[in-house]
Length: 354
Image 1 (tube, rainbow, N blue to C red):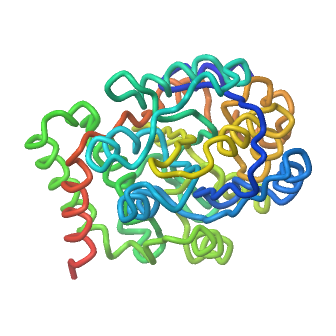
Image 2 (tube, rainbow, N blue to C red; image 1 turned 180 degrees about the vertical axis):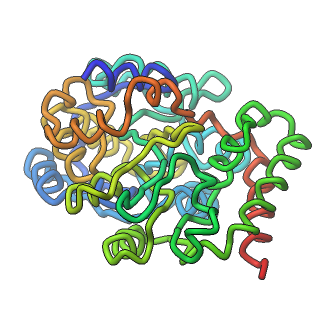
């Protein structure tokens, strides 16, 4: 698993761990699908007496929910690491982490250090790493040959591809055009110009798109049925489909897969910080992290959990990421305030285009 640690160290983040279990009854958790398997939930309840109320969400919805309440309604959230400092600077929706309540030895050091760095604002750390993965191409290799994102727009695949109308798609096509969008984050004018170019490309590609997916099951079923021969998707979906049909493969695109880390962050008006830290420390124990990783289909920031990971998942990772592809992963940096407004306008125009 040294290659996994190499990948992590290559671009990102990390942070700490445990606190004593809280005696309070409820933890309100805002998280992603498959990050809270039932057996993990039951074990946490048995060990701590704390009930966990789970609300499933995504980055955009997490920010929207917390912004609407000023950071109230939840005790712990799991935004991606690049979506913390910008929203925090604009809306003040999180509170700083109390690192004294975290067991740092439970984390992969490179991830902990990088995440602390990437989620620090005014000298305070706002995020800890949990699960990491990538966005790339899922291809039915019996029906299509694809090597990079623009292949989704080839005429031969008209009506047979899928993607999300979200910022990762804009960034992926920007990299595929030979530009580095992350390098332009601090130049809004240049970034807006690049996004306009990408928007035109994706508008011209609309005829190839069978659907813009929001629900991953929609995409999985489309690929299973042969309606979709290629799509931009998370690695976990590709590996799930590969387990069902060997011809469906998750491919790291020529211009680079996009690398992400989902974190733990504490909402500004959370009511049960003690339960939040107890949940973090519990989840970063290698044996627990391995269960969560198996449920999510990804790897975690828990030191030692990789040794317990499913052998098939390790093999799929190795097949998708030869050494050159590992080195070419484009890790998301923190998103500055205002960048998502630029992207949102472009996405709206793509959606509205006929």
